[in-house]
Amino acid sequence: MEAVITILPGDGVGPDVSAAAKQVLDAVAEKYCHTFNYHEALIGGAAIDATGDPLPPATIEKCAASDAVLLGAVGGPKWSDPNAKVRPEQGLLKIRSVLGVYANIRPVKIYRQLTGASPIKRRILKDVDLLVVRELTGGIYFGKKTRTESSASDLCEYTVAEIERIVRVAASLAAGRRGKLCSVDKANVLETSRLWRAVTDRVMADDFPQIQLETLLVDAAAMHLLSRPSSFDVMVTENMFGDILTDEASMLAGSLGMLPSASLGDSTVGLYEPIHGSAPDIAGMGIANPCATIASAAMLLRHSLGLETEATAVEQAIADAIAGGARTVDIATEGEADISTREMTAEIIRCLG
Image (tube, rainbow, N blue to C red; front, side, top):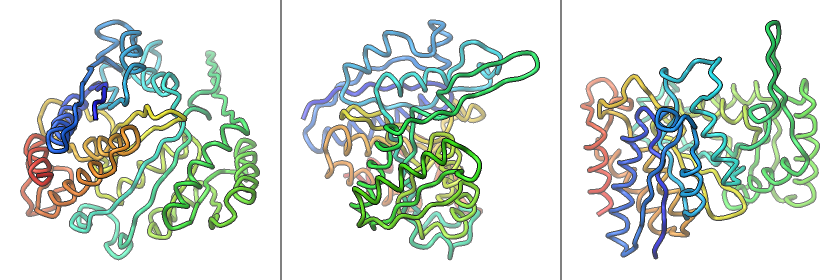
């Protein structure tokens, strides 16, 4: 097949890990006789420096004309002034809105060989395989914001339609897995969460009666995610809760550098990115873990291009590289040698065959 992929390297380690993912996509194209044409565009701090805009019109144009978008990372201390009117993260929020993606899917998979890199006990990590589905375009991140000298506010707002569509996405995913869905809210305090719970209960009863539904308050979910992670199949929650819980879940896998994500909407044009940030402390050092971005590229192959065989092959190549002892510094335990971003990428490509 022929496809157009826009790559947004972004800031910090973003250029390094996105370049690694592109190498793997090139290897896939060669092995399976596909043609991938790439556009590269600015986002985040790099875009602010070049144009004054965290998401320039040229970037929007390229993304809109693509079959999929692969993002590295955005942000860094250079642009971290909370009082700045223009910030890198605004570009990230805007591209999600422009592409119409509202469901952020974050798989949490534990590699047996990496259990030593996790601070969680090995017995707790056994059989962990879960998906977190995070609503992406509503909630407090997108609500009206006010600021005076003496106070500030952020509006958290959800519509019935927004909740219905994300719950249906999550339930459909659960139906293809182990048939369990956990909905996370804060209904004992927040009115938006009370609406979330009422809508979720109705949608599940009417449309997905075969799915086992569990409902947890977000504080309890945070505890159970570490105490009984293998009991979860698919977890669905609102924007901010999902952002926090998936960073917590990265500790199950041993590192933020292992977890990919796909942001999907009603079209096939998705936004794919690692869940980690720009890691400015190691930017340019060539030691960033590319696995999350490469796994995000695998999700791109699956969800936007419909290439299931190729996606599975990339995921297996990552697993084989890990099983063979390949470790970047973030997942290397005491006594294990660590390798560079470039070396890890080369090993994954070798395992791809």
